[in-house]
Image (cartoon, rainbow, N blue to C red; front, side):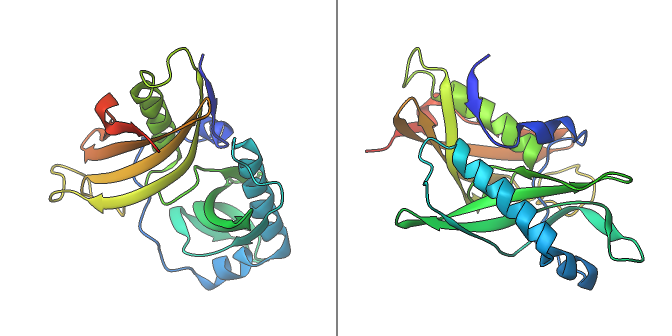
Length: 222
């Protein structure tokens, strides 16, 4: 099994929905707005982002973290009469500054009935993919970069960047909030000390989303 560094591995055990793009930023209800700024939630999100930073090979030792907007809602949150979160799934960005740079980390909140909310780090950057799709993307970039660093099984995605949508809406898709068009992203990968940029294309269809990351789309930086 290759040694892959991504902070959201445990999250994949909790999600059974098919991989899809994240929903566009949704308006935040008053209940969710109050919850997002609560002391306990902010501390949990910051702790998850700090752990994501620590797992990266280029981690900065001294950082400041600030949860920000917009929130990407995957499952609408529900609260009880006392304002306690009882169900919902969403991700929110965290601005991380330190070592002369500013980065965006992302943290997923998952709340299930009769359980305490759980918090997991997603990939850094502006990827539009949800957690399962990011997991699949990591495996694609692992294969795409194999020829550039032979005999090396260590890999970490240090940044992702949504670039653009491509083409018209995909056909025969059920209605839903996620983007209906194929899109393109650029992922920055650390692999045994070498920095590689990999272009990925995500193509949604009726069965899910196909990822294309060919070896020729992987280019060493510098």
